[in-house]
Length: 272
Image 1 (cartoon, rainbow, N blue to C red):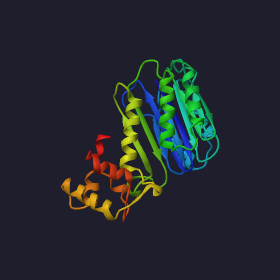
Image 2: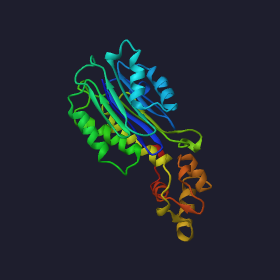
Image 3: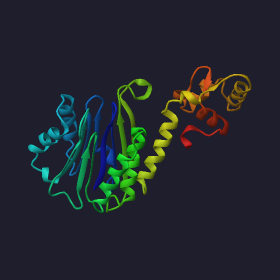
Image 4: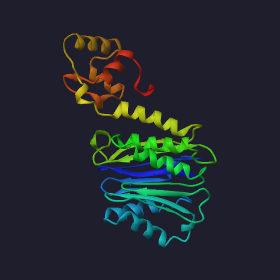
């Protein structure tokens, strides 16, 4: 019913998943900064999520995590599982009674798996997308992998939901959590494309400004910004940015071109 990737990049762990299943993001993914990531699917066993993370937390290798989880599971023939840890190879498992086509592949820092797929070409396309996208942020890599699987045929029953979940130390909003990204498309005709759109909005609102592109907020530019802010009905750039959820992109004495473009065109932050 599902195709997914669990992966590691530096200190970040993430999962991207799509399925002809309602709200797949509420079922498949689990990840913990400093430990690793787990995807449970097919006849998903939700106990695998906390149990797998507990094992990873103690340094158990992904292959041994998989072996430990399925060993005592009487329904393991119907399970599918992907695991990555803090270093080394990922691990994937497909029970012999998962519905065709089902299978997976794993390598250094990743595991890819799927069931009820159009064929093995889905997994191959996902692997190729992962290996060819080095240098891109983990968020983008994971969505690109999902898009590759979707384009190759994906779930042979159709499309319904997709999700992206990424964790890294202190990467959450305001540094108050480790959840860098938790996006879900629960019921949509084209969920992977919608997930991409949501990621674009997420990066607009919560991304950090590029120091190399910051503009000095002085002279004519400062005057323009003050006039635009006033025209929007706000007393300061900070107040306007707070209303538009762009406060993460503010830098004292400078302005992010992304913020400036948003201010100039007058669109609200959630219209991306």
